[in-house]
Image (cartoon, rainbow, N blue to C red; front, side):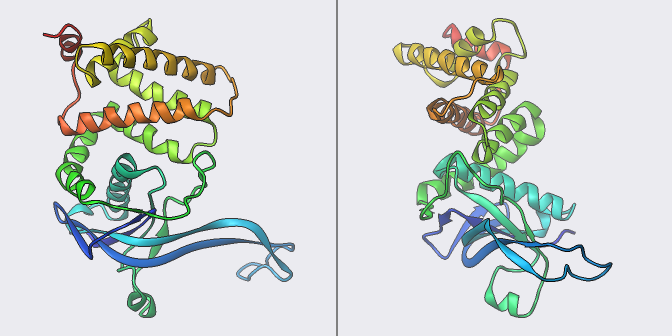
Length: 289
């Protein structure tokens, strides 16, 4: 059997004391403040000893408030910490899809995240999603997780887990979308995001821009003017991706935001339909079969 783990989620507030997500997972209200101030020493340390004084504080670091913990039961952690980390990442990524990119699985613990547990010095704690997010900036306040989002998560997280395990291309798209939250370059994030979409929908064919815009818009919209508008938007955004691939620098983050929105729509539809469309499925949608 595995071990019970608790993942501290930042960037969101749970409006109820506890929310059952099904499959043994649930969210519950807690509080923790994760912080990592940087310090600097100026002399080498002797073996087994701390660096000698003087030490100086460095004006950088990381800090976030945790208002919610994800309880991961032993049934989902048979491989130990690695399974717990994978589950925490998946839930955090699905929350980023639904409520915003600032949600983090900031840390994980083998004991409850609570004052009582800390006083008893229980379990081990590991930092997880603590990288800076230079493109999206810092969020001033956490977002409330609404009833619709809780219901969607309960219905779909196990579908997403199964799909990620069965289809490597879907997992790559999920990873590319998640990575946008910590990207340092909009151009490189666009390359990664559209590369994942291209891998899923075109299998590396020539004329990738045209083929991807036609097939992806057919997957996301029914026949009509909205499908055509979306195809034109996708082709334009893929052009921004191409500029990034060739080293063009831009301060305009709108193409990345629009691309992430299209990726999110795609991921949500794939999860809710519990499968990745085949080439024949896509062409049936294209031709209205």
